Image 1 (tube, one colour):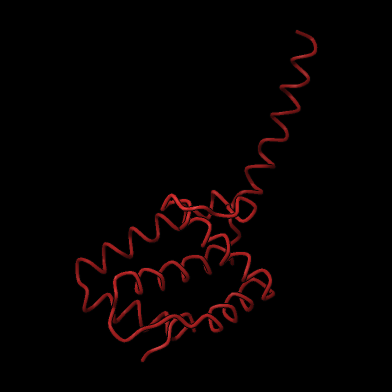
Image 2 (cartoon, rainbow, N blue to C red):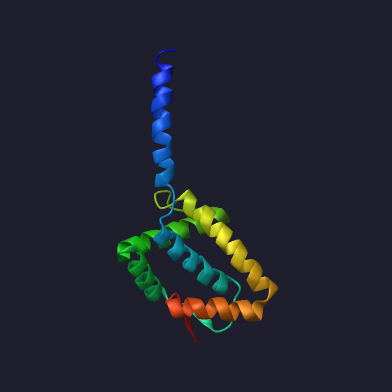
Length: 137
């Protein structure tokens, strides 16, 4: 019993630090929200929009501080999509917090796109285009 108590105390001190490490920063959450919104616009086949990969990386680099950080978030989002769909993904890039936040945002945006497609496609599509994630064609 004497050995277990110090181990439990140590785990109690470590666990909160790990939980904080798994939270998204404000910049990551903002970029992820914008990525997911643009993806929902494309998934719902809103007319007149296509992905702008270079623009997405540039936006992510501005928000996250570097193109590498932007690509890491894009890769984490990609892994989340693949995991959700039951496809193979790189477990090194998978972040459960990305999956959780992306899922909530996607459901919210998709529901609005289904409820009022004309308004929501224009609103979300134009916003995503203005940010550089999508471009109009």
